Image (cartoon, rainbow, N blue to C red; front, top):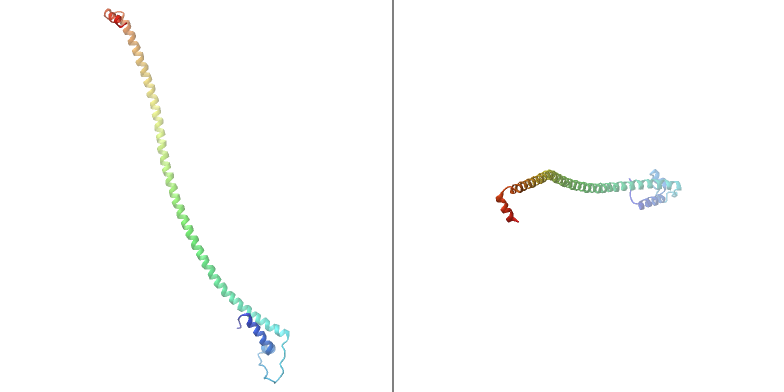
Length: 176
């Protein structure tokens, strides 16, 4: 099988034109020197040889391309593998960070819920204490009124008794 760079094809065409396309095509050896005159290859024969050489060059080029594609495929696969590894690492880090943030938020919400519950309990207790203080204040006012009424009655009773007691009268004069 003939393969190689383009200069090989040029050498093959030169050889065909030198030795004759017919001899190349049939495989017959060239006539010995001086035995018979050489025939010049026709254009069709040259084109046939050129087509064979071109197809050989195309096959060689596609072989090179296949080897290059295999190398490129390996490079692409390696690049893809590296990118996938980086992506997997990034996703793992993101998931770990996200999990930690979710735990932190859950902790904050739990703490806030506990704080809110404690605050609600305190507000309920304050409400109950305010109600009790209102009742206590009302009771204290009633007690003050009752004490004032009792003192007023006691003062009335004393003043009416003073008028009848002769001994208290002298003290009454002294008080003035």
